Length: 276
Image 1 (tube, rainbow, N blue to C red):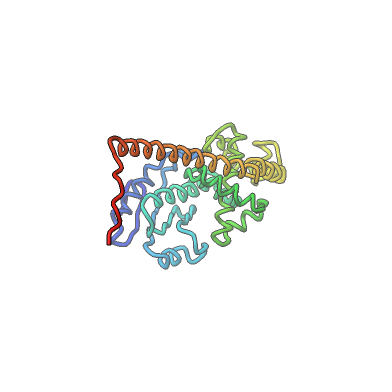
Image 2 (spheres, rainbow, N blue to C red):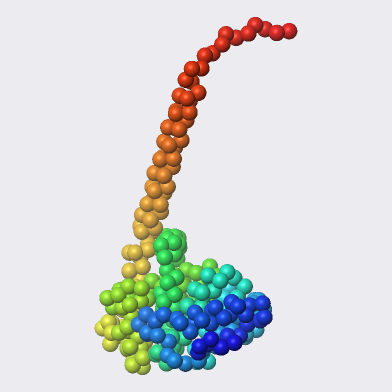
């Protein structure tokens, strides 16, 4: 089926879902630092099973992957076995890959591509930050090269790597004076203009990629290190404790009120004698 510029391909039971997702893709809001998708054809394929997904992606992705983008072909493949709200977020993530590649016209470091897609899809929240805090508190640290490898590793390593990649892109975003990706415009324009990622960093932030890596690692340690985790966890348990104290007080007050009502006008009779 065709919805606007999107051609959707799906197995019969998921035709309605395909139409809804195709409409969402056709009307996708602008992407941070990139803008709206160019007026080019997009193909969206829904794979109803893992076997179909692996076949369509030729087994090139990790077993935990549920979405794939092929920007040069303008194609997005989604594993459509999950809930619709998850598919909407996955679609936005994969379209972000397409939008970024169409804008810069070349492959970028994997950590940046995945971090950008996560930011563009709004996948970063306080729970993700707390999880990353916990990983760092356990001593999980990576440089950018290790990040790229972990993004294609097992699910546990990849989840940590996605979080770290997101923090790297968010740092670049903050340096650009924005939030939620709004500060990435100058860098992405530089990536489209300069021959390498390092050259774009130099032109935009006046630093090399090695300089950025060092500053990013320090920023992660300060924002999401064990002290931050302890503070976040402490705040959580402190809040939980206050709620529990309040609930106990409410319960005790209600018990006193009920006891007073029961005691009102209640007379205790003399005990009866023994019975045989």
